[in-house]
Image (tube, rainbow, N blue to C red; front, side, top):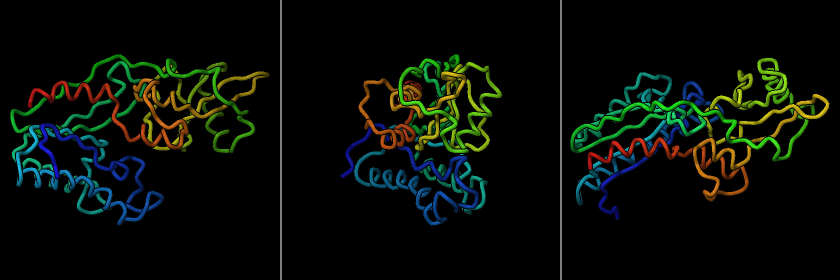
Length: 270
């Protein structure tokens, strides 16, 4: 039974709307059928509204989060014309919601050391909600890492992929500087720790490289605590200690500082 709800918050599956999704709805992320099943999770929101409308009252406020590519959701798998997205938005508006959209970058909060752009859709039964942009100064990821902690491996003992990323990063950055590499991006060439880290996903793609003894570069994966800090989550937040279990939870999450910003303005519509 669906209880009475003032605020309905939802995050439909984003994988097939992200830049990492393969063209045409097929490929390493699954079949076209799987893609459509994931996209269809957005329809559970209107299904919930149907149930609430029939039995009680609609939520006063909707807050929906996804990747910016969600707006390109199309009726045809190999298109990005946004036709299905516009149809879906019109369905929400059909319940009487006044809808606004805002794309926010977590780095612009001034406290989250991660470039993470996400789309927020806010629907209100009262006046349309305006979500102002974030304007904080970016924080570097250097505040999050512990270069003396963890198990480091000589880059020369790693895969060719890791060696390639580390070599490119070392050419671009100062000789004694530690930096980040992303093993999930074939074009990645190193990222300075003075910048926010790139987007955290559900995969353990981010690694640290530092100069070790005898001029050899060493590498290690980020720890769970470092991933937490990248999301703006306190170290005390309980998660599995195993990175392959914790990282998917963080990669699918919303940075608390961004959620707080959205809700501070959206709650005025309750």
